[in-house]
Image (cartoon, rainbow, N blue to C red; front, side, top):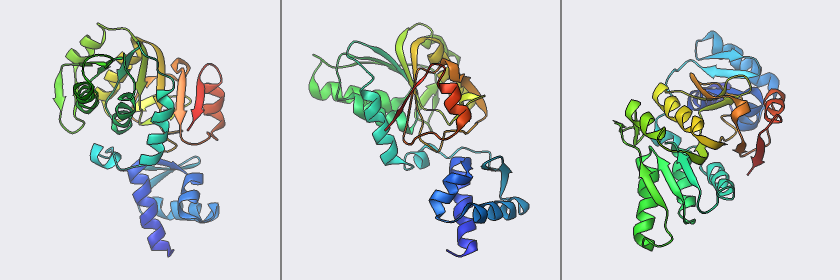
Length: 258
């Protein structure tokens, strides 16, 4: 791969995931750490990205839209949601936020019954309710779609009304997918409204289960909503190498690798 092609690939990856480690870029491009470090130095000088300890972050402040995120790491996400299904039992009440990973989770939950699912995601609600219609009411899952303002891009509801409705319920598990998970910042989101929804779900659930593929581990987004010591279960697609995150997780969270 010529250096200009490699630079384009690096920029594309960084802008997609907002932050990547040097090790991840080495894996993706199949070159040495020294080559990646030189590339990052040159790309920073040209204003394409910003170097940080152990990697680089995007200078593009926008998170990829949901239709882009739905196509990223699909196989990894599918493996994670299958593991998440094993942590859920009939009769439980679940909070589920909106996102590409939690939409795939809804597909898995269709295989279970006797759940009460409370969500702000139209897609999660539709997938589970359409399954109810196919199977009939007996043994199906109860679905509660939270009201509020409409976010057509994320296909969800948000705002103070949505948060007020969340506070009316108590869930056994909050199942959430963050933009980033870092030892000091915990789980974080790019959007303030999305973070507020997730935080309310965390505060009204007995357990918190996060689904975060490797692109999110060690990453910090704009708004933190769940400290790492509040986390009960983390499901990810690859063994975590970040020592600071591992040390923080050992204090109470169970890590499951799909």
